[in-house]
Image 1 (cartoon, helix red, strand yellow):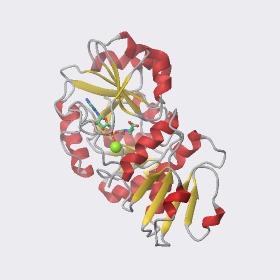
Image 2 (image 1 turned 30 degrees about the vertical axis):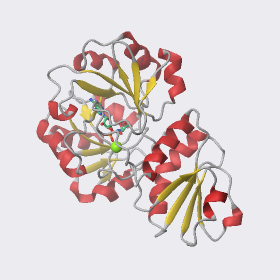
Image 3 (image 1 turned 90 degrees about the vertical axis):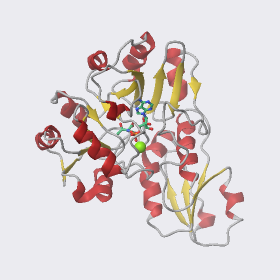
Image 4 (image 1 turned 45 degrees about the horizontal axis):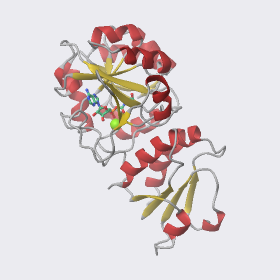
Length: 317
Ligand code: TXA
Ligand code: MG
């Protein structure tokens, strides 16, 4: 059921049920973070391996001190700059945070999402919400309530409808350690903006199988159709005989390819709009029964770097 009723959402969450929640990045599949039975339902429903930890969503920075310990000043600096927003902090966890949520790690991932409905929901709960993206394991993350409903339908009692996600890709995950700051996952807040606040950061690359973040695996966010991230569509397209090609275009249409399916991500040419449309467009093309989806690399700076990272993962089928 898709609904805007917060009271209803609170009822299900307090009972230990799962609710699809809107955030500015992507929709989450939420449960009471302090109820291990509820958390277990998330892993089961997503078919997510138990070694892949979840992000806790809270409504105020004050809550940080109740969940994390030994918090370096850099965490507060980033929080005050970007929260509510698309930044997830990895910090040392307090012992009462269930091991199931953190997959046995000594760190916990926390963020304040920037969505009015979900902030209102969180402020009325006396527990944080653990919420991974609301997609079956390794599928494309949903950015609308309707897509969550398509993925999970009757298997969850409710999806809270907050409209289309404005950022459209996941949060940037930043590990704050005693002597370094590490970006574990590129996302809605560009790397350059993080560095403006805390100075030079280390970036985990796609091929790092870091034990801290088992979820940052290479294959991720994938459509079922083969997707290729290419330097130039004009060059790449010549290699294929099939007509069943879809082009995901940044901002300019390529009318010379009128016999192929084409979707334009950002009519105004902004990376923000491309980011907002990317996942839903991937899902849309996936439903067109194509042999291949081609996407051209974005300029590799700012949000473009995050988009390229998401696409590289989508392409590594
Ligand atoms: O934008 C987002 O972050 C969305 C919305 C719903 O908030 N959530 C999201 O969650 O993308 P999920 O579960 O799809 O991705 C969370 C990532 C996983 O790759 C997981 O491995 C990592 O965060 N993570 C969570 N807790 C961690 C921890 N304690 N240490 C290392 N990595 C962690
Ligand atoms: Mg996810």
